[in-house]
Image 1 (cartoon, rainbow over the protein chains, first blue to last red):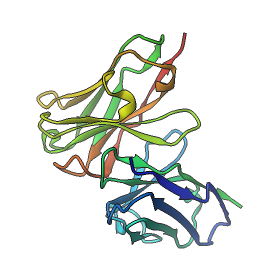
Image 2 (image 1 turned 90 degrees about the vertical axis):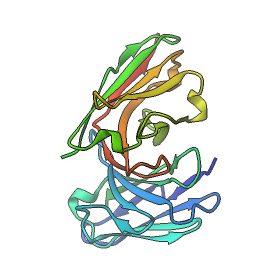
Image 3 (image 1 turned 30 degrees about the horizontal axis):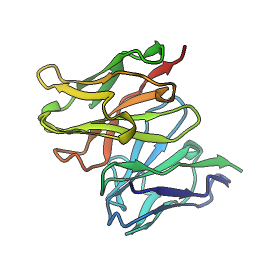
Image 4 (image 1 turned 60 degrees about the vertical axis):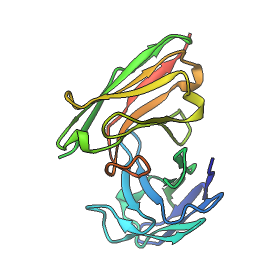
Amino acid sequence: EIVMTQSPATLSVSPGERATLSCRASQSVSSNLAWYQKKPGQAPRLLIYAASTRATGIPARFSGSGSGTEFTLTISSLQSEDFAVYYCQQYNNWPLTFGGGTKVEIK
Amino acid sequence: QVQLVESGGGVVQPGRSLRLSCAASGFTFSNFAMHWVRRAPGKGLEWVAVISYDGSKTYNTESVKGRFMITRDNSKKTLYLQMDSLRTEDTAVYYCARGSGYSSFTWFDSWGQGTLVTVSS
């Protein structure tokens, strides 16, 4: 099983600042990586797939990068609606696995 | 637009069974692989199972093998998860999620709101 490790577990950021979230895979997943946003009481929302492709309707302030084992999600200027938990997910191997999540909170 | 609506959750005793359903609308259901993903209290997301677009292939995560079965009825545009021999560690919100296309190796581009399953004596 590919283990996905996200860091940090919690990120405190002020509105308008940049947030950088990391995701590391225990073995290469090529570019088969997605990012999701999860808010309490809501369904997860796809942000990024294929490591760097924004999903339909996702604002340009969200960007993804990386390949192999190291990936990054960057939120260029945090808006109030961006405070949430973010998960990465690999779809290169069975079983499909998620990272443990990074909570982005208001500083 | 794409809609996925789960139902069937509830409180059940350990060892008992439960069947979840997910009603799909707004897209051609038979063209997409479908998944179940869960989130236990205080934990992250965990992929549970996938079924191919035509129902011919299924894969489960190891912890539910032999206990959970994913099926679909394309004529009814409905996804199911039969959960037998439930354990307390199966307590979670269960989400129905659409794969991005025919492939089962994929990301999830649409999600339902989830249904809560509580396994407790």
